[in-house]
Image (cartoon, rainbow, N blue to C red; front, side):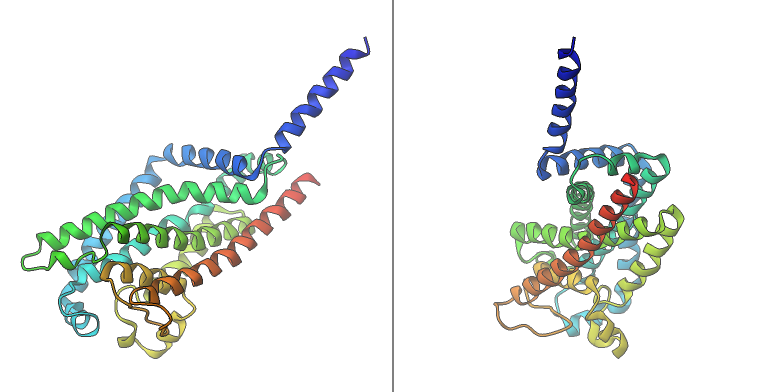
Amino acid sequence: MSSVPAERNATESGSVTRASGNNSVTDAWISFKRWLVKTSRNPYVTFTSLIQPVIFFVLMAEVLGAIAGGTIAQTVQSDITYVTYLTPAIIIQSTLAAAAVSGIGLVDDMETGMFDKTLISPMNRAAMFVGKALSEVVRITAQTGIILTLGYLLVVLKPGAPAAQYLQTGAVGVLGIVVVTVIFGGVFMAYSNIVALVTRDREATVMIANLLTFPLLFISSAFLPLEILPGWIQSVAVANPITYGVDGIRALMLGQDVMSVFEVTAFAGLWNTVLPAVVVLFGFNIALGGIAVGLLKRASKAAVQ
């Protein structure tokens, strides 16, 4: 008779041990699959995140291209079209739009009670955040491929445009662009999730994210060279992660050093831009990611109590 409770206790303790014994990679994979499925079941978010950059790209190329084309030829390179110059900015803008709403998923979980259930589970808190971020990476990678293809088509279809100058670094450059884009996206994914964890409100998360992120696009090297912009914008751009994301991608596209906020000569050519940009973006990721994970741990302790 006494063996049954003992066996039951052993089974229950064994199940707890197995659950808590999952390594961080397994926990991240579980979180990744969950958020990927959740995103795929919301066609509105997927559609808008993929189509909005396309519309924005075409409009910006047509409206600003006629005005800024001469400036780009004087400051960067004479045979570079504005579409080529603008492509990195649109990649960053689309990544920013996707990453800035990352926290909405957390708020939805809070409202349905799923967030509290997840917090009292034995999952690793950092792995939970990493898995969620990786699900966003899939969408960001798809957006980047679409924008690069669209930019090439816009250049090819324009009479007299030097299509050969569109992507100087070839397939290796495409891979590098995806890497820089993903690292950049992590910065604002962390920021968006921090806002969500602090406010726990859907509207507040959207408003605060947009209040900061989109103005930062215009206080950077995204749409025009920094040297022709006011001095205060040049000063703010030094601390703006968007500047480093845009410059890193632009260097990979043009195959040259285009760092706009400070001069680096320790490397060769485009690497004087790409490597410092990646280092700075990693720094932002570590700082903001650490804050996000810390807030998750604090929320977990509160949920247990």
